Length: 516
Ligand code: XMP
Image (cartoon, rainbow, N blue to C red; front, side):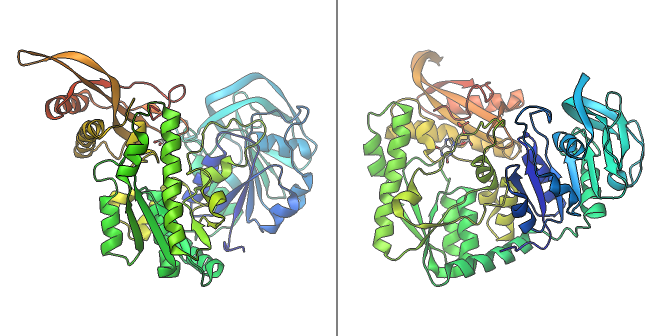
């Protein structure tokens, strides 16, 4: 079903910034989808694209087996913007020449506009505004017939090109990255000036069309959804509930490994504000007894995952006739599962393993088209509380993978108390929302300290705070020293059993965000 009145198709040639192109397009309220370059032209055309963007990519167009595309795409009378590799491919496919450049252009560069219409409409040449970001080792050497130059840079005589009669154009630089200061204007010109989009894709319209689609798909059947306390499952549940009301049942399994207050406010909201059916299972004793004596991180993860499936399955069976399982799969997960040759896939998936296979339920994934920040907007649109919508990501195995060594009630207690202090201080200083994640980790060692006149031999807490866009890569957050100092002082003074706090200053890769 084509529920979008206008749609941009982004053909992916394996660039690390393809998803960024999609985000930028959607920021202009235009719906878009990414499809791998291996997609048949007929399939692309079935989408009735309002415009097409060809992404960058790591290869050279003249390489043997370089990713390519059916050249007939250029004869469809659909506006096409090629970005870097995409532009080179367009030029080569239409009879131009692309060669290895004498000087590779990486990073900041400046362009000189030669044509102030099309992509550059409304933009004027000015030293400060025409900084662009380049990342290429090849360049266009000769244009095919019908093409002309729109902008040049120091090392690229054809930094931007266009067909003089058809809506075919390309840029050697990357308009999707923030370093290209006029990038947003260029994309805007493509979307609105050239493709004539209206920009009517909003969260309100997304809710309307998705609610309609869910109703149609589900009919009078029953849907089950696992609530984790995280924003994705909460938004999934709220959206499906809006569509089918009490045909939806949610199961929340308390595995005893939650942070203090992690799910409380959300469950309260669902309880008080909506009539969402939530089966709240307290399985703390079961999980803690399963985990007793377990030290190996992988075994911990497996036991927690298995326990969740077992309990979920038991509860689902009690409910009887369920046809669908709702999951909060997001767009980046969908894209990553269609990995391209040549592209580097970094992220590992952490979904609840095997649930759909075991349960033989059909899947409903209403967030498949959305990025995380869009899910948050959707959550607000659906009236979820800010606290739930802007919560930092929290891993499925919970505090279990933030306690190095054995998980016991006492050790959970220490970690929870330290973690509450981290969160309180992050929130009161205004840093909670600025970082991707911030949390405490309990280490499996004890160190010597002195309190009053007494020697102590107690636990160590590590403070882990990271900045990230999507958890695929991350860097440690540069928190102010006085904030770090306050967190450390409070943990050591207020959490009995801890006499030392250390700061994790590792980036991902090579470290990961969680310690296990
Ligand atoms: P890592 O530690 O791999 O984590 O850098 C990347 C992101 O995923 C979260 N994470 C998980 N989420 N189940 C989840 O739902 C898991 O098993 C899991 N392990 C890590 C982590 O908090 C970070 O946001």
